[in-house]
Image (tube, rainbow, N blue to C red):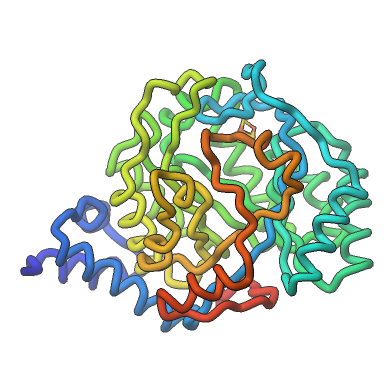
Length: 343
Ligand code: SF4
């Protein structure tokens, strides 16, 4: 039995300017029929605005060195037990070549804020672009406008930078020496420079409430991101948040569904974090409206060292397993660039 208030809230959040009361009601759904309706509606919206396909992005984690200190992350600079590596340009080009050889047309180069020179990154981007006809997504954290500009001119297409929280006080409690305003400035700079921009949050970080998640969703609606990544918070033993409970899976899935219905167009990954729990919930993420999978092409010698949270799923999904995953949710795999769908 679906409550009329649920039907009404789902209708209203499609207007593009959702109210926090409606968002809160839908995020907290637990009744199986109401949850099923929410997720099915998200899939209908995905089909209508993004077509019935899953975009593949090849993920290469190029460095586990980080100068930042996000309290939730196992790579924060205070974790003296973290293993650190920094791949050189040849290693990165080799990984990219492997992905291209398997048909991928997008790579995501991700790292901690490792202090690598902007010029060396620009050189690497140019080398990749010279060799391969692919889209390059960077996920290298906060840098200056000039660095972002240099990389854009070298050929970078997209940039992922999660806002983590739009609540300034919550943001402050999760980061020792960073502010929400600098994160927002970086996101604005990326947009100004013409990147396709991705953002996102973790669900379940200590101090977060349904109300703050609703605020984050309103931010996503008013800023029209090309990509939005949502994953559950998973505590890491070597961080100050070690004893905190894991983010709730259903709340994470409801958040994906609500964002899909409210924002319609973004590419949304069924995140690695969803695949790193007691079972692989990426299927559930796709059934809640996600439409991206990011198979991991980091060399196996490094994969376990990129431990932003424990037991991170790092298998490189085979083409067969991806096809099976897509078929089981009624979608097809798109190996193309899958650029922004925003109009
Ligand atoms: S989340 Fe990113 S920037 Fe923050 S500590 Fe981890 S690797 Fe560094």
